[in-house]
Amino acid sequence: MAHPILEINNVSRNFKIGGMLLGTKIKAIDEVSLTLPGDKPQIMSIVGESGCGKTTLAKMILRLLEPSSGDIMIEGVPLSYYSKRKTRKEFFKKVQPIFQNPFTSFSMRKTVDTYLFETALNLDVAQTRKDARAVVADVLKSVGLEIDQVLGKYPNQFSGGELQRISISRALISRPRLIVADEPVAMIDASLRMNIVNLFKKLKDEYNVNFIYITHDLSTAYYVSDYIATMYRGNLIEFGNAKHILTQPAHPYTELLLDSIPKVGEKWEEDMTLPDLETKEYGLSGCKFAARCPYVKEVCRSTVPEMVPIHQEHSVLCLKHNDYQTGNPKPLDRSGLDSNNQLSV
Ligand SMILES: Nc1ncnc2c1ncn2[C@@H]1O[C@H](COP(=O)(O)OP(=O)(O)OP(=O)(O)O)[C@@H](O)[C@H]1O
Image (tube, rainbow, N blue to C red; front, side, top):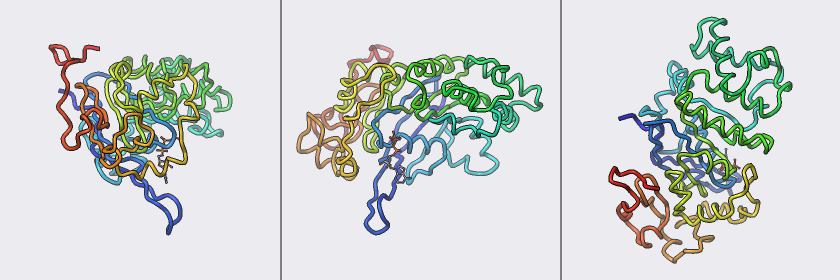
């Protein structure tokens, strides 16, 4: 059986905020665990309001930040394996990033094709410039661009949408197993966002590549995803099969999100965030959503919830689904599974 493409095991990341003396420690990521299956290419979205820890998690997957505890594995290989100089290149062949602002991904003083050729040569995808040209032409075609439209041009000669497509083509050069895209459509004209998101869907099968799509934009996340991970104040509060979460949201926060789902391309409603509550909620000893939850009971304020499996591919961090009992989560409800143990949604 194929290794999971991504395994996150009990990962936490602490930050100190405020001054050295009066500062407080927040757990920006609080014991997050999830497994993304590797049997076929998947798109997993990480959603949640500003400050919930999405970027921190993405940076740890990209090895830009070390976890304070826990470990992350990609196709069965712990990220610590890639910390040596000689294994670093292996990592970039396997995992590629796409960042929010394509204008900061490229220097204004270099032609964009330089990056594409360098990536092909440095990651040993091509040995000669001629071979590199064929590779570059190929990846550009996959994102809807011709090489002649790109050769010799500087970043400011492209629109944001075109430049982001070029970033995506660059990420494809090594034929990676995983692309981590942190808010890739946030800086792009709303009318073009769906083009980029649709591109992920197309490329997933064409390149047999998995995507982690980090976004505020719930409508595109729900549209594109095979799996959805919802974060709240550093906790993974719901994870699973996107279809199942959409039809049967299990966390009260996810219910709230689905009720407020905006039109495609629209950003999160500002009043979804309660900044005054934020730091307090990070430090709560029970469920961090308790102050906002319509189903809250006293036990929720004092007990750290555990992930409860709702179905084979759907878990939720909420005591309500454990009949407000603490201790071992109740066994998996198999009522939604068919005879092959698959979700019948
Ligand atoms: N280097 C840092 N030092 C201190 N605190 C940090 C640092 N990076 C992130 N944080 C804090 O960790 C929490 C999670 O931040 P993170 O950027 O991961 O959230 P996010 O969900 O990606 O937010 P956004 O959508 O606004 O980018 C926030 O409270 C943030 O202020």
